[in-house]
Image (tube, rainbow, N blue to C red):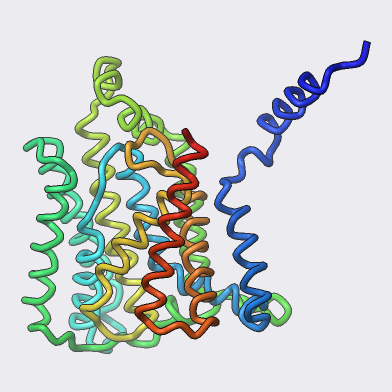
Length: 329
């Protein structure tokens, strides 16, 4: 007796769910299509060396988005990441002021400040029961005000070569392709975070808290501690993103906060982390960041004015998020 078409279809579907292909975040399939579009519009921009450069440019956003992923998996949202990036940026530039001997202590201090901002956010959410949106929105204004106060409204200082290497340097060369240090940092952080999310008790509890906080609490999970660590991690990663940004640019800036905030959230959602929490993938977030980088490159190749780019970026991101939400449901 020949199997029916329905049976064959169900068999193929079950095989796909068990295969390695099913573990690939869907955003990477979309990303492949975006790269093909880029190669048609601007073949030079789609050359391997230029694509690697996009990865380097996406490094700061990628670090910030990884931290945002943890918070969103827990069912929260961190709106203070943009201001944390700015504060880390201006603090590093002004404290180091071109002195290579100050790099390590200043980097450690800035990372501690970022973790401290995350700690405050986490305490507001877990102890005072302030909603994540309100808590981190308020922190966003406070931290940005602190950056303005510290810099006097005009960031000063610059970054020495030993730190700029991590933003602009290359650690290896494969044929004609140079491997950026920023891409290596991003990859290492992604691998470590993916292991923590999937192989540790905290990672599994993070998902449980996001899926059903009440049920997680009744099963013995310390939901406050899990959530608090998520916000600390997000603040730490936002500061790390700011450090990588200033290493790339070489000077402090007060103008990038909103871009990092929106890009980190968009990358998470496009990569498969829903606002309601309970699931998410670090690798999906990486794909979301790369999606945004290729999108920016396509719009640049089309020579659209800044206003037109912003409109098209917003529309495409909204479509991508809507399509993901529809397929998920």
